[in-house]
Amino acid sequence: MAAREPPRGGGRGVVRAVLRVVVGVVLGAIVGTIVFLIMIQGSFRQGYTDLDFNHVLGTMIKGSAEEETGVSEALGVVGDTAGPTGLYATLIGAGVLMLLHALVIHPLVRRHWTVQGLVLGAVAALVVGVGFCAAADARLDTPTGIFGVDSGGITPLVIVLCSLGFGLAGARIHSLALSPGWWEVQEEDVAAEIERVAALEPSEPSLELAEQGPEQGRVGA
Image (cartoon, rainbow, N blue to C red; front, side):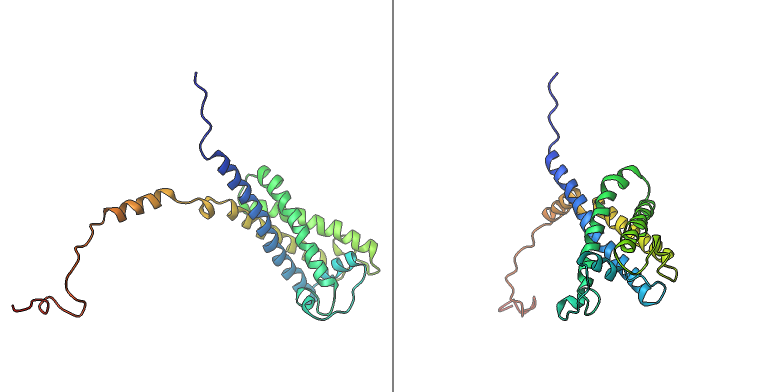
């Protein structure tokens, strides 16, 4: 029996699949971070929690928060150098979670993207509520507690809801990135359009000037 030829475009298909995953992870991390920070920082400003997530995370990494003015103010807490550090750290953490989603959650949880998003959100809630809060409680003077129970207000609920928001946003972006409608060229539609254009009969050239009507073009009639 003759050996089967490898499918054409196999290498390109693998490259496209990898690119889709990369785009899904990167965009999911960016959008998920935006959603998470808007929700959790908004909850802090509205008084639902005393946990200033962005500031606390940045302070944990930098070791201190210094006064600063300039471009950095737009990236985090105004006048606080810990703000941008917290933002960048959140982006990196979101990237790791989205990579986990692409490699583990998406292949194992073969359900609608909303279900996958809830699973991702649950994982994010554990990371924030247990990992982050425990580290903040150990390194900083202000008590935080697991899931922010010592941060006042409804901090545990805020952490869970913000994490679910991140999970749903990230899972949706990842799902869209893997969708064929975003990437695959509709070759059949293109071929049909080319055939339609080719089938059009060329119009006969007219000797009439644009300003002349059909009667004006007849000289000496």
